[in-house]
Length: 203
Ligand SMILES: CC(C)(COP(=O)(O)OP(=O)(O)OC[C@H]1O[C@@H](n2cnc3c(N)ncnc32)[C@H](O)[C@@H]1OP(=O)(O)O)[C@@H](O)C(=O)NCCC(=O)NCCS
Image 1 (tube, rainbow, N blue to C red):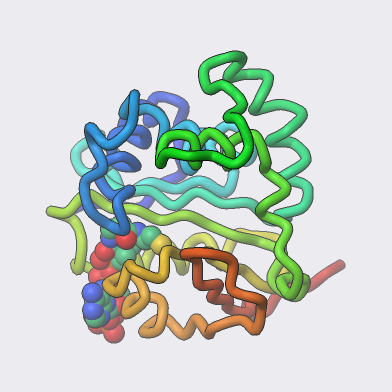
Image 2: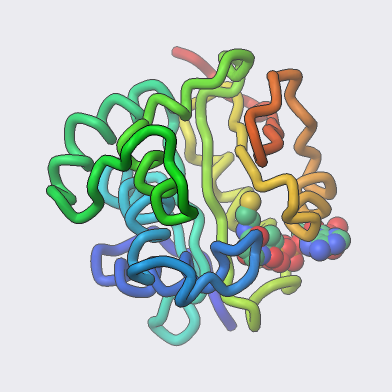
């Protein structure tokens, strides 16, 4: 029976694999970009690297088959992404010429502009997360358990997700878990959903 456990550094290759297999609005994005590492480099690994205590996996027989990664404070995360993560990747992804002209350049632009995460209207929900499960492990309650674990751990009054509006399956999941649409100016293809963290004590 798969179990939820804290992330370990040895899970990192699995995180990259799960990330790209679910990165096309919940579907497989392998082969979509110059490297299958790109999605993980933006949306999974920096969280596991910068805030490993807020990363959890679904473990099936010793292998991570799903994960939740996140941050307690999006502003601090954006600044650490710039100061620590961008230098760590070095010149792997070039700064694209403005404006970006291809899907690949769009992703490079996101990487080089972590301040995009600082969206007005999210102040009451400073934490954010990313959650992905391999297809065979979806719709079995693991997503709900990962979110419960994160909410029980994260030191923040509220959490948000910036999800691709096209991902209607994920939207049904978040709706079911009590996330609500946040009143922020919708930026491009994303919808922002939020949930208060029950019992959060700021002391
Ligand atoms: C979205 C995702 C994380 C949800 O996790 P999951 O384990 O499949 O969801 P769960 O089985 O825990 O479902 C929790 C609840 O949401 C409901 N739910 C989940 N997906 C649903 C869907 N597509 N339609 C309707 N309800 C859904 C379940 O019925 C369940 O309700 P219940 O607990 O009251 O019975 C997972 O399906 C996934 O990784 N998808 C691909 C990647 C992705 O889209 N990630 C999110 C990016 S924003």
